[in-house]
Length: 173
Image 1: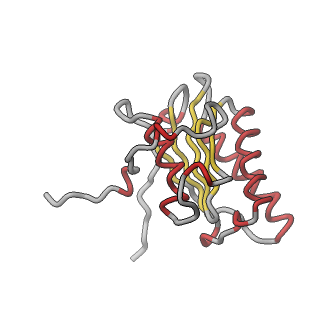
Image 2 (image 1 turned 45 degrees about the horizontal axis):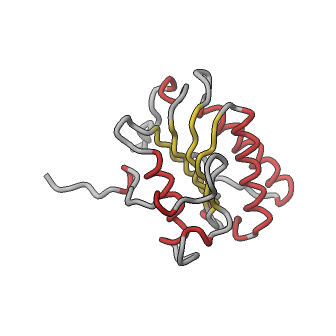
């Protein structure tokens, strides 16, 4: 029997335009590549550069030791999350592989286009709280590799409970 994976992407048109998107990219085999502060800073700067190039505003970004989260908003009707993600992964993956001889990223990434009833501030708070949940710091504002390119670095009033839909437990029927 051959295993076939169900497509996990929405229709490509859903990733176009002026909307909020939450992205998570994991390092190959979840290796803690970004424990190295230089590599973490490089990833943050590349997120900044690529987002400008592809007409996205980066509201929130957090580089964890083995993965990256970011929350972006498309600035234009032509802003394309697929193009941003592909370009970012190709550029960083190529540079890392040239330097080390190994892959940087897992094959896919997780994305979530926010629905009308979802509040971007809650997603930002979820991202900022990631290092606290993982025990990397006691307070979210202590973690050096997270923040925002749009608003004051971190806003304590925003920290709220939010869980991505794929991490929410299904309630028995």
